[in-house]
Amino acid sequence: MNTLVPRLLPLLLSFPLTAQDHTRGYDDTPMLPGQKWRVHDAARPRPPKVDPGAAAEEPAVPPSDAVVLFDGEDLSAWRGRDGAAKWEVEDGAMTVNGTGDISTEQEFGDCQLHLEWRAPTDPTEEGQHRGNSGVFFFGRYEIQILDSFGSQTYADGQAAALYGQFPPDVNACRPPGEWQTYDIVFRAPRFTANGKLESPAYVTVLHNGVLVHDHRAMVGATAHRAVAQYAAHGPAGPIRLQDHGNPVSFRNIWVRPLESAVSSTPRTR
Ligand code: MG
Image 1: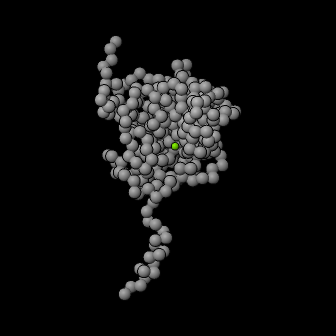
Image 2: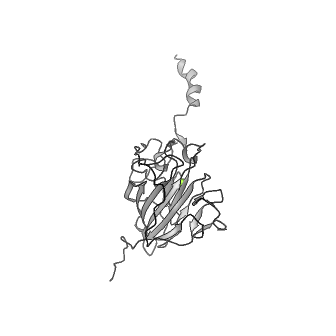
Image 3: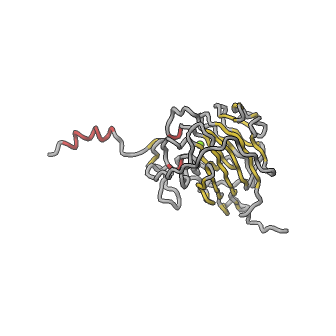
């Protein structure tokens, strides 16, 4: 009888062949509808890297019709979990400080959003704990913020991913400590009067000026280790920024509400 297998068994068991963590990903999560990958699939290829070039020295001036959400001065456009937003504001930037997510006072439907973010310069963590934040439209549809310059995580959880749904087409991350831009066109989902999904959310994202999602249909409201689902909601909602426990900074945030292009209601002139 071959005695090698019994002798090797304890060794094999000490090195699990399955991937179940926030750095490598998972192989026990549900399949994404219409895709050949699981949610946070460990086997999903990481997007190729693209060097987006150096960051601009100064933030660009918002267009004249933009609603300015943060100009470096104060958090008056935002609210925190207990009322006023309490993130630290210093040197023209606001920084996550453990006081919880913040959301815009104003609600938005279809819109164009510009924001700039910066991952901490001294990342001591890996995977999903390395410069994690995120921007959520309607408080529930997340475009991930993460330091994906030097760190690996599952593909649908890296910077600019539609978290848990689609990786960005390429990884256009700059190093931690450098300012990065997101320019996002968000088209809200539409629901029928009895709450059925009529049209999904569509998202176009440029990361540091590089197109990473081109009018991509979202699977549903962002979920962790589960398939995203839609739940009917109204035509507008807040934009939320995530406090994931990492001191990510933001500056120059503005939004342009857009006239609907996917409304089921015929437009009259
Ligand atoms: Mg996040």
